[in-house]
Image 1 (cartoon, rainbow, N blue to C red):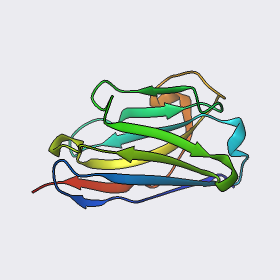
Image 2: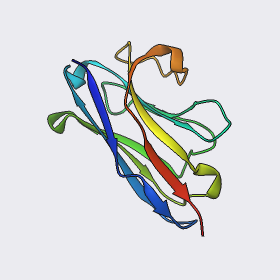
Image 3: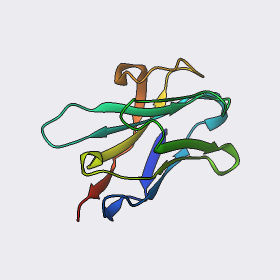
Image 4: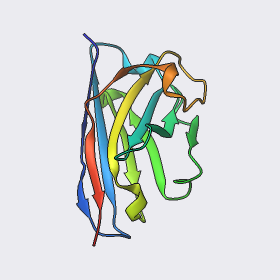
Length: 125
């Protein structure tokens, strides 16, 4: 069955970096766009970034543009989210999700049908 497993979260100081990984199984990663989302306590889940089947197709939320980089390695069935210059407001549970499409550029969670369990990212001094 379709599975997505996130890892790489943790506690980091403001200005620090983390790299999240999303390992996919149960489907051919090459055929689908993947998105990263996050949910902070008391807030709705929001889209952070997405990448199409062509690694050149990416999109970022304004709040992370210039700080986060999404990439994929289909041979390893893995999508990454490199997060630099982290801020306290980046604290959230981060989820990866599989889009219904090869690419739409959407960060609307309704377009994503399968979700991982999430990994906690805490940015604090």
